[in-house]
Length: 130
Image 1 (tube, rainbow, N blue to C red):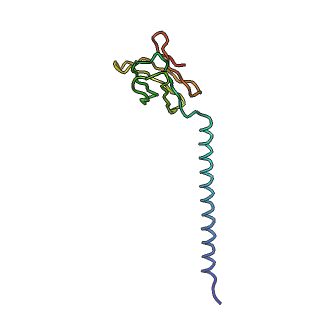
Image 2 (cartoon, helix red, strand yellow):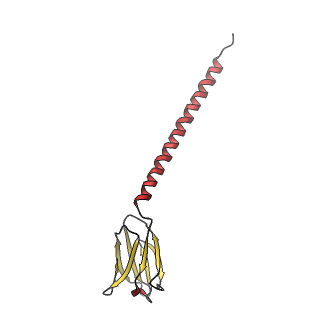
């Protein structure tokens, strides 16, 4: 009589390998599902960036504009229609306006709006955000 020990060992190894493969595949699928679900929820709840416009008071003046610690605009707004799109960098952002020639900080503005549209304007010699 022939012994089936070798065949039984191979079958056990085969079933173990298939079971391990399915466990790994289910783990990968669940990980991808939860990762993308969190990404989808984040993208729906927050805006992607701010659209900054300059008032007519800025015509001919040279300013540097920083969002948090990144330079986002350098120069003189050509006209009132100068629009600047800045991606949202954090949950709470601040806008820093620096006069280009003297490198003096003119204004530090907290950006608290949920909307994406912002307007920079002069009010009594001081730069404000609308």
